[in-house]
Image (cartoon, rainbow, N blue to C red; front, top):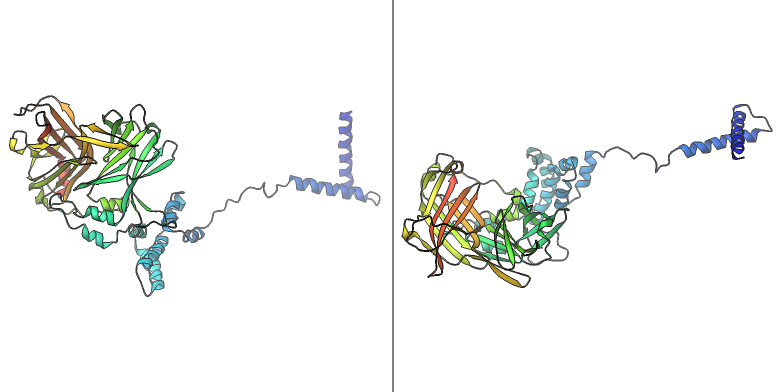
Length: 477
């Protein structure tokens, strides 16, 4: 019965359509009208609604996007440049950054013809400057790099260390601090503020001991930022200026080494002077420490990758004259040893390539041997404290004859027990400290004197690639 009903309805529809094609008679006019209405209704149903139509694929012109971007501040404009290539090119336009630079200058300086200045900058100077020029100028201005007062203060050098004598005072006056950002494997970031600092003559040790710490095996990287905090923070303050000093991978693929342990923690060493303490029995972080050298520290903490290029014009004859070596062994609580050696003269050695060697302490000369206090790394976290033996911080500065920095190192070092290979007058166990990177190597040999409860530093030597000496002095070494 259902099949018969379907056949009947199909026949009725065909008849109605035929009636519409023919000229309708007076009695059947309403039938043709009904068919046309139904056909229109079917046509409307088959047409897509506005929501079903394909989206418009036209792109906004660059002029309109530039106009929109002109209403953003420097921080938002910097962030939006990472959206895609087109936004990167537009957001780095000199016209946008020159206008922001002009407005930043207006906040700090009174100028009688502001509008004329804006017009001159945007129409004439902008076209003459290379791409990215005004962006760098503005970021320097925002970071306080134009503050000539602290640049003048940093010209006063400490004759003992060769570093700026007022570095600590300038850091405190500018309210510069450091924070770390830990990124886990899912890309989530956690920011930690510094807990306390320990200043030495040529470095600062920054410690982070408070906070909800993650497990080490869940982390991907660590970023160290310098921040300039306001003296009296207010609720409506803008986000603080953050300068990226360095980024370190935390993956377990050769980026770290085991440095020591006590009853509660084990210590891992990473590059750039970073050490991380982990609770024994699991991989949860207990504390983090970073040792930062004073050389260009304020510039790195304010400008990061936007630091100006350093003028390395040096007299080539200085490479044949005396060097100065200043070394400090310390921990976050106290100084262990501080020595200065000058002048030192170079000698060539052939060890895995061509190197230039500076010998500060010769094991054969007993008068040069130096007593050293107990070497250890104290720590505290979550109300607990401890001390890791035979592990400490090393801050080393090598200056050329003109007292310009030649090699600067801030790192954690570890003592290793070694067989008695040096024939010395001392009777005691010998230890060695080795450090090396792409710029040079350090070797220190110690002897433990049980009766004095002290170490004696009996050998100290540094080596540099001959190519580094040639690059620094622009000539033969």
